[in-house]
Image (tube, rainbow, N blue to C red; front, side):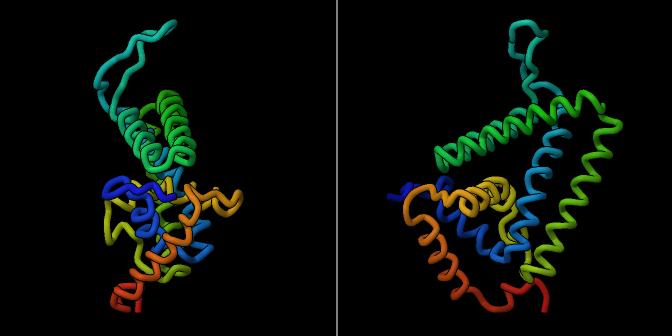
Length: 198
C-alpha cells in the first residue's frame, strides 16, 4: 500500500519529478557519485556560521548547534518522514556528512576549507551538467523547480542505489506508479521543454 502522502510528503510525486530528469543510466551514475559530495561540502561551509545554541555534553565544552547541524537535521527528518526505512538510512548519511564536515572544517580552517569546497563543488556540478547535456539531453531538474531538486537529489540517488542493487521499494508497486506518473507527465509536456539543446 502507498504512503498516501500528499503535498510536501508525497514521495511518489517528488520521486517522479526528479526521476523524469534522470532516465539515462550514465547520468544517473554521475549523480550517484556527485550528489552526496555536494551535500557534504556545503555542510562544511555551514560549519563556519555562528552557533545558534550550545548543548551540554559529557567530557566536552558543549556541542555547538549551528546552521550546519540544522541543515543536515532538516534533511534527515524530511527523508524519514518520506519513507521510514530508506529515509532512516538517508538520515544516517546526512548526520554522518555533518560529522565528517565538522571534523574537516575543524582540521582545515576557513581559509583552506572554502578552497576545497569550491573545488569539489565545481567538479561535481560540472560532471552533473555534462551528464544532462551529453547523456540525458535534458535540462536539469533545478531549472524547473530549484527547491525540490535540491531537496530530493540526495534521497533520489540513494533510492536508485537501493533499487538497483537490492530491489528496494518503499512499498509494493511504488516504482510502477512512479513510472506511470513520469510517462503521463512527458505526454503532457511540449517536446521543446524536454530537450537540453536543439
